[in-house]
Every structure is written in structure tokens, then in C-alpha cells.
Length: 405
Ligand SMILES: *Cc1c(COP(=O)(O)O)cnc(C)c1O
Image (cartoon, rainbow, N blue to C red; front, side, top):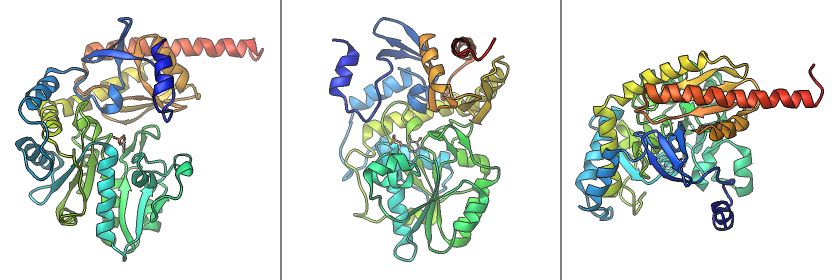
């Protein structure tokens, strides 16, 4: 029996077949069971901020597990309070901010959804979200995720959510005094690393403020330094009412959080929300250590600088398939001229490189934030070879059909 057989028999079929089985990781590299090494430019989908098995991550887990892992939310622990204060500081909430802890992105967005309802009450039943944005797979967050093919098998959805195009005109047309909240994904990662139009977040802030609606920004993929600021909204110089974070803040440990600003911090009151595991001492200690390492090593700036370096290197690749880059910092979508992204992902795996295709015409790169020259040079060599493999196969197909020559 192979691992593929075991996976096919025992794992839920909500995911497609697993592409590979990995047994070990170190830094930017993964190893399969045959000892073959892969350069990992997916980093567990923007999760492994420090790469694999980073000593800071490993030691934080070991030390906290040996001290105190979990006591429930009847009690406080030092790591929980330290992480809450750290998140408030890097998000720039000031004194009045508050933090709710969960264990995933979806849980952070569930909390944000409830925040929106608490703010809206019966007077404001409308919640706006962007078409093609991704907010999670639970029933509440699926209602916020404007993808009919994802929602359809699970109808009816939680009511009240309306989807609008990601344009300032659509915002102006949709906002009124019956809107409780606008949810925004500042760069749509799962949709294919799609940027918002220039000035969108500033317009969203002005219009939601004018109508008394909350502006809630989903920073689950864009946060923790990924775009070259701690959080993507900080590029726009605005103050939202709430942000949600997960993925990169744990560096591989499952944790998520809702961070509120100003008056939105007073909406939850005892009994309105909770989680047994949320904010446990182990997860919060690890997240603090990961964010501390990102801060101490200047990795937010590294994300901006290495992002620029990678984009320049990708622009210099001589391939008819590449149509440029989207995204910001180390959240990079390579736009393709043909729908061959899945073929490129497979070819890359053959060449020992892990990347991903959020759609048929985009390759997503979200390497660890401490990526350096060696990994970038190796990425360019492996990616160029992968493109060539796909280009050669395309020419053969065309020849076989007698289209050319
Ligand atoms: C990954 C992601 C989520 C969902 O997070 P999970 O931890 O998978 O529940 C929500 N929003 C965005 C923008 C994401 O990238």
C-alpha cells in the first residue's frame, strides 16, 4: 500500500488528492519520504512565516508546553496578555483596542461576523462583502465568501450578506444607513492575488464612517508582515474598526484573532462569544515568539525588499507565458498569458519547487518572510526550468494537432 492509497481511503474527500507527502522541513526546504529536497515557496499558504522548524518556533513550543499549555478562558495567562498587547501595538489600535482569540482564520471571521451583527442590530441588517473575496469555509464565513460554487451545496446561507464589485463606484452605490459592516480582503489571495483599485481602502473608510458602518479588514493572508507592512491596511494610512488575522501570526501553530479598534471594542459583552481553545497559553506564546522574531530580524522590511527583488527577477525571465506580477511584498501572483498554472505547479514539483495555482492563470508565491538571496536565485532557476518544461509540452501539443509548421 502506498501513502496515496492510505490518503484516498482514510481522508475526507473535501480536498483533492494530496500532491506529495512530506516528512521533514528546515528553513525554506521540505523533504519527501525518499529524501528528495524541495524549495518551498508556498510556506503552508503564507503560514510558515519563519520557514520550517525555526529554532525560535521550536523553543517557544517546547518551553511553553513544559510550563503551561491550557487553562480555559476562565483564567488569564502571561502569554495571552503579552500577545494581546503585542497585536494591539503592531496593529496600531492604541489603548482602546481589544483582541479576541480563536484557532483559525475562519474563527476570527466568525467573531467579526458576530461583531457586525452586534453593531447592526435590527436597524442595520445589511452586511457587504466583495465578490471573489475569500473569508473561510464555515457556515458563517461561507456566507461572506462570494463564490456561488462554494455556497451552492450548502444553501441556505446565513442571511443579510450582499456582494458588491471591488470598485469605489459599487461602494458608493451600496452603502447606506442600513449597512452594519463592510468586509474587505485587501489583496484577494485565494481568488488569484488580485489587488484592489487605487484609493479603495481610503474610500471604503470614508464611506463606511459617513454611514456609521464598520469597516472590517480580513488580514488573514496579508497580515503578519506579508505585504511589507505589519498589515496591508497600513499601506493606505487608514484606521479600520476591526481586522482579522491568522495564518502567518502563528508561523505554523494554529491561531487566529479578531482585533478591534475604538468604539467597536465595546460591542462584545460577557456571554456573546467564546472558544475553549482560543487564546490558550501554548498558541499565544508561540505567536508572540514568531511575531517577536519577525520584529527583531526586520522581516517586515525584508518582505518589502525581497518582494521587490523577486518581482524584478521574475520580470527578467525570458518566457512568453509570463504577463507580470500582482500583489505586494512577499504575496506575489504571477499572471500567465495562458491557463497553464496547474501544469506549471506540477512541472515545478518535478523540478523540486513548491508553488501553488489559486486559479488557472496565476502562480502564487508566498515564501517565508526570512527568504534571502540563495533561495531567490534557486527559485528563479527552478521556476525558469519549470516554465520551459511546460512551454516545450505546449509546442509538442500544437505540433501533434498539426497547427504549426
Ligand atoms: C485562509 C483565509 C481564511 C480562512 O482561514 P482558515 O484558517 O483556513 O479558516 C480567511 N480569509 C482569508 C483572506 C484567507 O486567506
